[in-house]
Image (cartoon, rainbow, N blue to C red; front, side, top):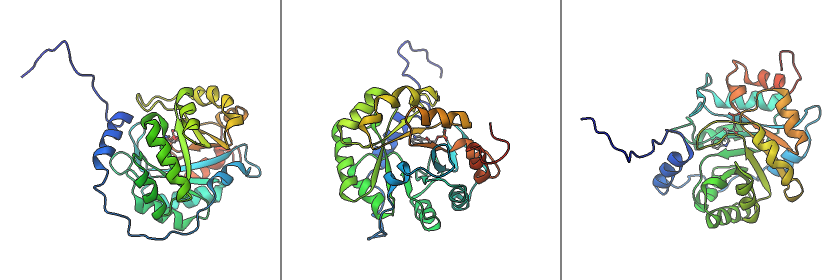
Length: 272
Ligand SMILES: O=P(O)(O)OC[C@@H](O)[C@@H](O)c1c[nH]c2ccccc12
């Protein structure tokens, strides 16, 4: 049957922030508790961001994921091998997507990657509760991503406090200046500016460049995230105040992501 309605509901595209957060809130509490009790001493994520990697224009947090709502499937099933190649190319930290349905990841990936590298590992997911920050620590995360745009002020404050408690760094991500201000007010010290609008999945690399200068003096570290493809994107982010950039897709499209990282850094021929 076809119906015409003047009050049609807006279509929610799969993989957008609202849709993923709604799923995450439904899933909360359905996962078994972590089997890992203690975890190894936390690797210092904040220090890895601010301590300049010699010879690199800016520090790079390199990301592993098998697929993404905006990028589709990537040709790498072995995220551990990719993470090792990132470390060999000089990445300052690794970001591991642990969401299954939209990114093909898992907490087991986090554990396997952390065991395979010696740099800090960020759990990249859409966390909705302080209990998940504790869970992340139990699984060995050195840092967690918190998305300011998707969390209320109280949630954000509680999750940042939980991270401090369990000694996990919080990379608090914002897409606008207003959300970055909320992140600071909630106690964030490491701020990520996401160039991707998670409502539309479109990227604009100017986003981080516009917002970072206003945060420079009020944060411990700044990270420009998403859509970075060329050396010029990295140097522009650095010049606007980024201590580090977070890069996934442009590396994961390459048959050899470690080489792609060296090229992106201008350390090997073929970069742009
Ligand atoms: O793959 P890209 O465009 O290089 O972007 C990496 C990272 O910034 C992106 O994956 C990301 C930023 N914030 C997120 C929040 C959830 C999931 C993913 C993300």
